[in-house]
Structure formats: structure tokens, C-alpha cells
Image 1 (cartoon, rainbow, N blue to C red):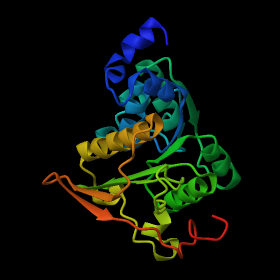
Image 2 (cartoon, one colour):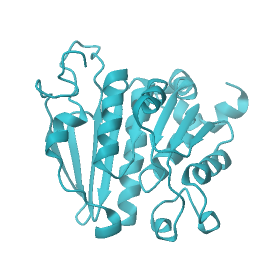
Image 3 (tube, rainbow, N blue to C red):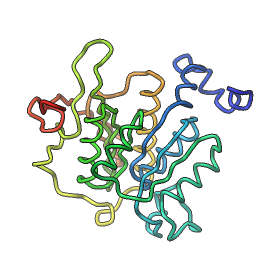
Image 4 (cartoon, rainbow, N blue to C red):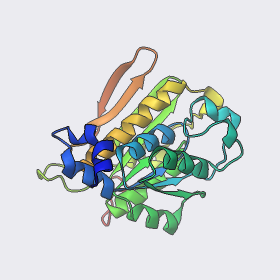
Length: 255
């Protein structure tokens, strides 16, 4: 790293758990962010500020006036602009050293599998179960850690699913489908219908960035369970998760 980089990231480098080696890992990392909305905005901002070398930002939607209450990557001049492009421009202004790859598309099938396979960690910041399950399947197949977040009304949730073999030889993590089987999907709860508390998306999205950064620098992720936040009281609850041996995604013979 040159002198400017040492100065820019000095507050990371001062941390014993990161240091120069950890910061270099961040600079070498490739992170895929699915969704450039309420969760993807703060997640991508903190990843870029932290010095992640390459951020692929995926979203097929355009900026709408109703987004600006919480989707802080975008501003009023961006109305009508593709979120991936608007978000990429904002991230480049924040940290020109970061390579930002905007994808204005809805990834699926082989295309999704290919993009996921080139990432070191994936952040699912989407807003629907179909996408979440598709991303989970791709992450399980590629062996890429997944950090999943959700926020609606005053309720937030975050979980990290890392199916790689733990260095201590412990049990592998469950996957998203262990928690929410595709055959038993809960009803969709969209913020366009039920609303969402703006700062809640910032809290959850920032936590997703933190979990991703910890995975990259070699710190243990908080994958003990599903963390639930009630933003009315700021009370957290953690639900322990176990891997389902009958899971059709990670429990299948060839998963």
C-alpha cells in the first residue's frame, strides 16, 4: 500500500484484528451485493469506505421518489436512473480506488451462478423470497459465504450462512433454505405495502457490511443464529439455527 492508502485506512490498520494484512485482504476481496436499495445502500457504502477492492452491485430497478426516504446511495438528481448505475457513481465518488461493477439486470440461472462463483462473499440485500432462494442455491453450490438481511416496518433480521468447512472442524453452518424452506415460504411482506422505518435499513445494511468485512479479514462471523431487531425498543433476539440434514439445498447428496 502507498502512503495515501496507509493514511486512508489507518483506523483499520490500528486495529490488532485487522492491521496491514487484513486491510490488504479487503483490497484483494471481491464482494457481490444483490440489491442497491435500503439494505444494499449502507452495505455498499461501508464496504467501499473500508477499501474492498471490487464491489459488484446488482439491481434491475430504477430510482423512484419513494426510494429516497431510505436508499441513501441515491439522491433526487438520480430519479429515473438505474440504481446499479447511480449507486456505482456514488461509490466511486466515495472511494475512487474501489472497482465498482454495476449490473443492471436480475440475475438468475447460469448467469447468477457465474457471478456468485467469482465473489468471496455475497450480500443478499434483495426484497423477495424468490431472489433470496436463488442466491442461496448459488452460494451453496459455489461454496461462497452468504450474508442475508431483511427489513420491513420496524422489524429487521440478519444471518450469516457460511457452509465452508470450519477451521476448527466444527459443524457446518445451515443455509438459508434450512431456515425458510422453499416449499414452506412465508407470505411476502413488502415495504411498499407495509412501510419501513428508514434508519432500520441502515442498521441492518451496515451489519451486513460488518459481517462481510469480518469474513474477509479472517474474523469469525456472527453465524450463531438469526438475529432479530425490534427497532421500536432496539431489543435484539437471537434464534439458534441448526442445519437441516433433509434440506433440499445444502442437505442434498451433491450440495
